[in-house]
Length: 153
Image (cartoon, rainbow, N blue to C red; front, side, top):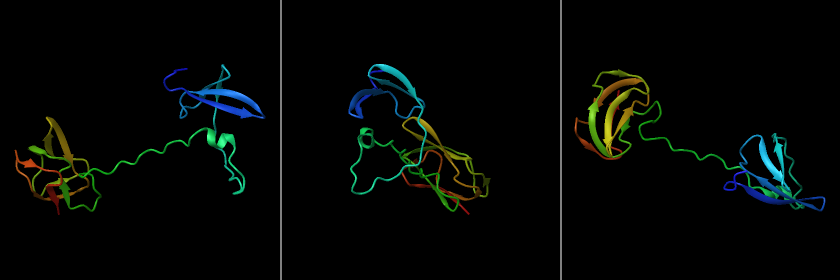
């Protein structure tokens, strides 16, 4: 077992102590060592019954923390919903290419323009299907976060 990510827990079952070492709690199956002996443990989700309010938690209830929930990422400025009428700059930079013109019919995901920021070219894509009403930028123009780049009909 890798000692860097190893977690050790002392578990007592029927008054008998066990030293349990676990690597990755999110792996399936788990590779564990109990008092130095290696085991492969398969964990299945089962129905959980709540303990009565007057009953204290057992050692197993408090031995391991709950699994972390994945963090939600906020939507980016240029991936708004289908009802959005404008596409805004997600970061400051310079416009180095404009790929559409007023009246063009575009599809969701189609490149509208290229924004150079920190020496990186960033494709600004359409968040929806629609028709371009206006281009609010010019080639070489510096833009700041939130500036309107393109408007839809």
